[in-house]
Image 1 (cartoon, one colour):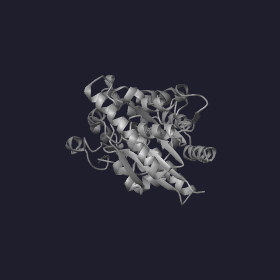
Image 2 (cartoon, helix red, strand yellow):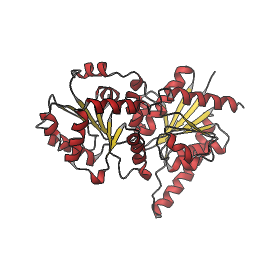
Image 3 (cartoon, one colour):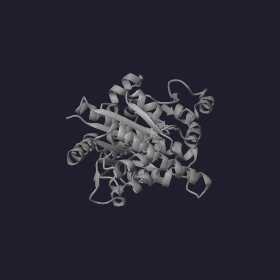
Image 4 (cartoon, one colour):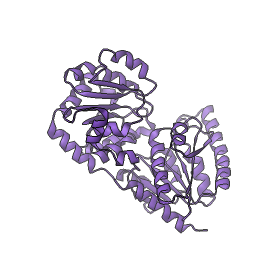
Length: 367
């Protein structure tokens, strides 16, 4: 069966990687499939999508400022212009189905697709849905969500709980193999600190004050700073770099690092689905500037399940962070309990289930 699919989503890795996972599954099922990505001119998708071997077109679009301003009016104008551009892309590519995985760039394309009769599906990664997806919900055909908590925000007849699509590297990751490749002994304690694709300045600075403590305790620390903060944190880390501290600017092998870790300190974005699948205990620190505080809601799902510790940035200190991480790392009972609870939140078949939805939609809309 020949199939043509457009994926739209971007800005951060949390929106792009689910689309990449779905695209690979489509190609796996249908080797002759045609796949096109539509993103924003300045989003992370400009780096990720081409490196994965997929074609990318971009729209000139930006997020909507929360306060009324001239820039808000300009953004609305760009969005309307984006709908026109999206219509041209749809007409030229003629997809069988259009999929949105979040980010403001998905709005114009999915709206145009729905208005002109193309089968449409959106995927929501967060427990509290984005404004874009809440607005699109009335127009699209199907809505896949990663968290059961998100279902109440969407029409019941459209929504399906599928979980978050996982990268093949996550599905194939294992602790022993990852540690072997990283040259980390199986019995060593491993702590991974990662702030997401854009980094996290407060988290980076706060954790860098803990280097001495974890070095003395002989904990193997992998700290992914993000490109923006790497130089500044590297200056602080000079006295500690070595067998117990590895500083990483951008982790191209994040699935391997996650698999090797005993505990992960992270922003609760798209990484939470990977933590669940791998059964990783975590300390989740929501970004206070995240749109509509969605990271807090993601972290709350995990903390209420006993899979993670939720720590809010406004009340966090280096000492508190270090003490909590040490407490978990050196308690086998707590590590084991949190690991079990994390895995209970996983949806191992998410990618396949969403692709089943895509195929069903295509069949229902045969022209």
